[in-house]
Length: 359
Image 1: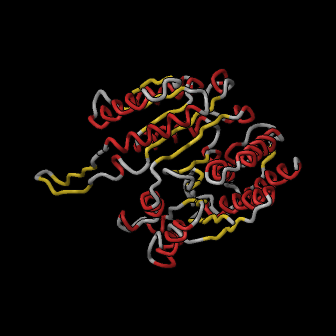
Image 2 (image 1 turned 30 degrees about the vertical axis):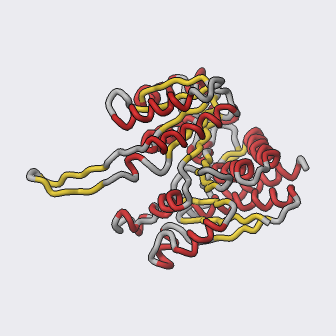
Image 3 (image 1 turned 120 degrees about the horizontal axis):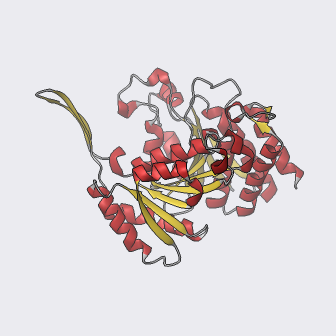
């Protein structure tokens, strides 16, 4: 028996996580394997109940599980708390405590959603399939930071810091991923300005020597942002630091037609991983049965493939999502003319129905 810790979180998190759990239950039945699925508190929900965004019980349960399915965290009612006490710290602490240094974010423009993309028709029509590989536990988000009083007022600082081993391990994840795709990798940095980027680039070049079958190039981050708009189809695997990956993956998500479509996996050295849609808790639309659950459902597909070695089941989930989209079903965020609008629950049920049709 394998165990999945489910952390629904806040806002729209519980709604989308619930749809992901439907897929997990289907996968267990399809594989003839019992999956133990247990829910735990995280984020604002945990603060309200325990005063801590990541209670010890939740952390220990995640450490003992074979994988974690995450909803979303963030709640306006706790925004007044100090940074280290806020709901969003739950996922940051989880990544650090579980050694999840690599964030994998696929950004795919399905032909069925080309009309929902903000890209020009001739660009969107080509489609794209990009894998963002973002370093997750280093860089400016985890460097020394603070606010000091200077002679002319307050001075704030956030320190970007990378060790060579941190760059090397994330680079290897990206190169290995490229081997299973189109064997093209672009490393994104700001090496014309930043010392950390110069280190990043030099380590990537050294690691590349062990992957002669992968075509490697480098782009400054500002150029990469422009190229994503101009011609996203040129990219296969994009390797980035923590900060740059955060920004570029959100840019790529908009190009797919909806940020609600994008899944992600946070992984380390082994098969264990934390899986979540990249959208936030969206408190303004939470509880209204309108949020897009496909990012969570596709995150489950990533979980099945990476953590449970169920590649066939994962492919079936991805194919089911496409069949539902081909049938013209859309949640509010990706509506186009002639499509049929459905809610969160119905979209999840439609994917399960599509899965059952082919078995």
